[in-house]
Image 1 (cartoon, helix red, strand yellow):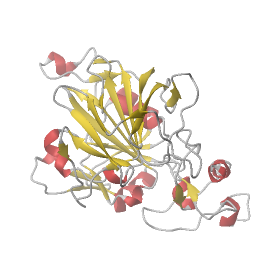
Image 2 (cartoon, one colour):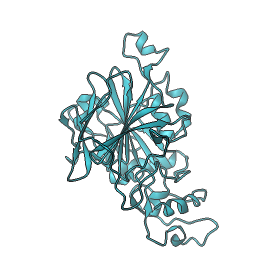
Image 3 (cartoon, one colour):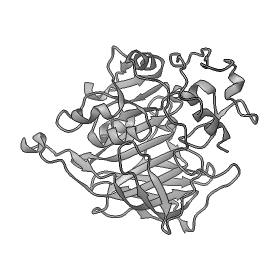
Image 4 (cartoon, one colour):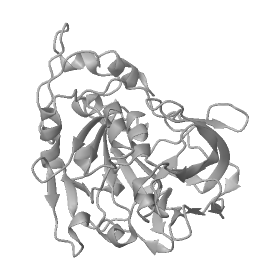
Length: 353
């Protein structure tokens, strides 16, 4: 399945000029005959998406650096979210006061014409973006804890002058900025950072073509309690073979397209979440920003109306998550998009039925 990924990895050290979003450009390969066929598997002229394990990427997209975009998840802004249904991976964890924030990761971000609303960088998401060698896109930053750490990733501070667009959606200004795919990639190129991915290995141990992972326990509905007020629920749709996302019992749809957000894989990772210390906001009587441990822990893998218990580890910022079965063997993951919930183990465990 991953012949095309492995072949691609051999080419990532080569210098390729990249086009702006949605434009096709010739890609010359230094030291080769410059023929696109030299990068293509004999099986197909498309490439495997390393974030989902699915076939279908063109060469230019397969070689570009993933993009990780911070997305507002405060309850009043959830109805105006857009682009999440096109993400390859979405991460969700608490950031302050029981509120969660999202980071949507795209290998082929051209599929989402707009993503947002875009909000500020928090410390934990820098490490999550680094684990994908992603270009990290955000608007505003936690100066006390995240700013000193931002150099760990290639990044773009989004604004209306470099690919962001303000959309009148009935909310206050801080909830109106969206990433415009047609524009912001050009700004990323101008940062001078490489637009090439430095590695093309698959994010997880994806099942081979034709293999459909089903686990031993029933999981038609999964509710993850990030806090007393923030609970994300996934309900299994047997017709699509995916889970539909809800906020509690409220169905969330894409603001622009009206589509529901459906994901193939759901991961619930138990960890330790505490308050950042020291924290200037807490000293002023505001909610303290959260310190989320990404070292290791237990959790759940949910797919195809079933689930199993797993263990996970990440370690250093540049590492991807490693998922294993309880016996220590590598977890086999179904190809498809994923939603990763990182929750405080001291809260209630997910409710699975």
